Image (tube, rainbow, N blue to C red; front, side, top):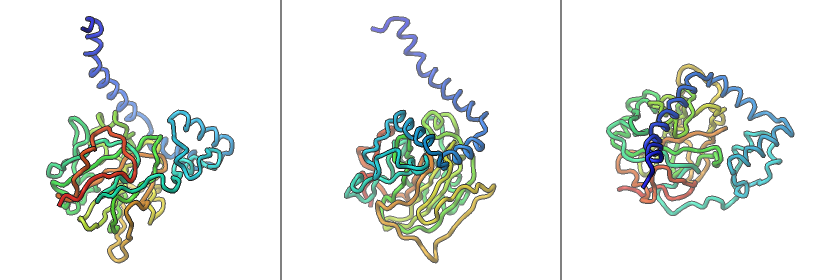
Length: 300
């Protein structure tokens, strides 16, 4: 049995975790997140010789980055931190599963499941709407009513390129300006509507199983987001959303092909129509995932 002191300490843990989360959110509200992000982006793109190499080696050591998977495993070969952070993997490092849908990233499953009408579950006590996520386009959001979603978090140690979960054709891309809160699990628990408040790039695709959305969500010190067909989307960071349509010249992409990358990483939120996907029975929140693994089967 636990002693009285040990029992009290154990009982206090949820309260302490809540207090820590609240303090983290408060500190982010006070920080000049945009200025920090701009500065971080400039530093990450700088080619500062031995200072860059020192920063890369310290990052590798601190986060336990597995450089053996990289196409170039030598940290000293990267002239800037951004080039290290978006490093490609060696051939064969991520074989594609024989599945209708494959995982598009390395990372951790934050949440996944059913969209309740238009509400996406974020964390206990928090949800947000599909309309808000896609930048206010109600007709686009309506296509995913009662569908499925997956929120995938990329930690600093992860591979930060994003790949296609199936064969598809790009139809639209929307850059939605927003905040730049951190997207770590503690912030997800503490900031209502986090993924629909942060800056993001919404990509709409058509596939043989229907339309789906891949949303690249920015965060504090995420210098920019880029796509394979457009290049760097942000900066610039205008006040109003920007949109590109590809109806007349759709961009075809194959399963496993790179579709984008984070220059200092973040989160991907995916939306699927009803009956498009049946998630893998091995999936669960907080589970680590790797690009190319089976994400789900065709539901129909």
